[in-house]
Image (cartoon, rainbow over all chains, first blue to last red; front, side, top):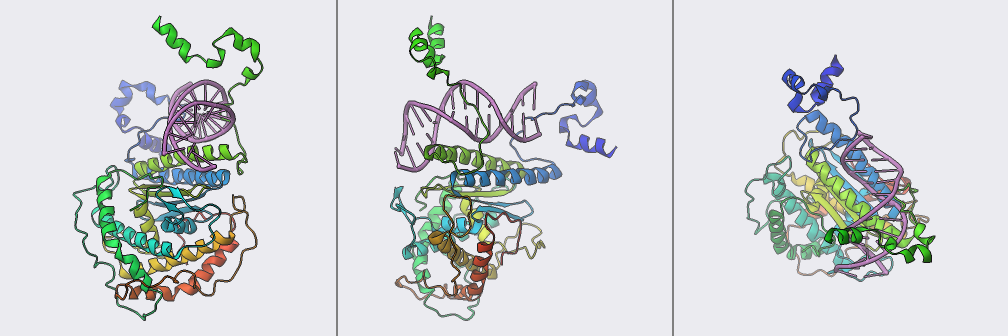
Length: 220
Length: 220
DNA sequence: GACTATCGATAAAT
DNA sequence: ATTTATCGATAGTC
């Protein structure tokens, strides 16, 4: 009985009523489901959606693992469930890849690869560049989280994006603890060119609606 | 007439003339392989490896896109080819997800979800936490890149990992540009607890060999 | 040199 | 049984 109800629940919504079965009784003969094509839109049923998320996430991670094994490449996947829970994968580990991602701009200058062998040294200027991007990311996320910028076909419903991002004042309102070290000063330098970068960044995000799938892109 | 020509064009080129059967009959016998099972280890042939990387990466990105569409979840994938080129995917975009990843610790405390709705405010303390992780990541990446820590079955051949990470002095050797702003001071606060964190972090990485695939994990 | 596009065959998943 | 994701090989692109 329970099973029957469950099956019924999983069934195509258009066939949930007796009338439907009368009209098309053959449909009940679902002995062989096989792999069926599904629409690539948000799954309505919450339970199904969660199950699908778990399954596909597992499959995705597996694929990523295989990719790294087969091709000797570094891979990281970061996912957030609708509930906001984090699931990550990475080879050799997520943080390393993310860090490298943030650092990126090291050996690459407009698709011109300098890094010939295995770069052992990390340019110092690169690290400041990292902070630019990190902070830029903060900006992006901040914006996204309180109004949802792009994302047309997702959980969040995009509304008119705001365009004010001429100054920051939103994240350094924290009381200075015990401070004063020269290690930070260069971070300031990173902040210099950030302003314009962020605005152009946010703008580009506002334009591109769906998702990003970039290859290199100098990321400015 | 036209149709006949079209058909001829569509035909296997190698079998269009009688001569073909006479001259190289055996070579022509190379039946198409089709999808075959392959060992899940590094592909030896460099060309094949690259091709596989491209193809599987595409498949992976597609899957990720579907996951986000179906389940309304945020996803980001970061990959580096062996040549060091970056390929990223993200919904709504990679940076946003990465940023959220770095910020993570907001509503979650030991798998205890506080965040009920859509958190609109970003705790300031969270941001300092972010820097801890960012810097920690730098440490990790630094270590990995100049000696390769984990990764047993990958391009990089892991050798004896070093264990010295008591102090940092590798990244703030940059000449201070024009500096001196209070925006940075709180970053110092972030750096406080970093030292110990990094060491424990690196240690855990040295222990775990293959890859990380964590669900929540308070990440300390 | 590294990466992408395409095609036919087919294994794998459901 | 049908859909999907690769595979191998190769031609073409950056």
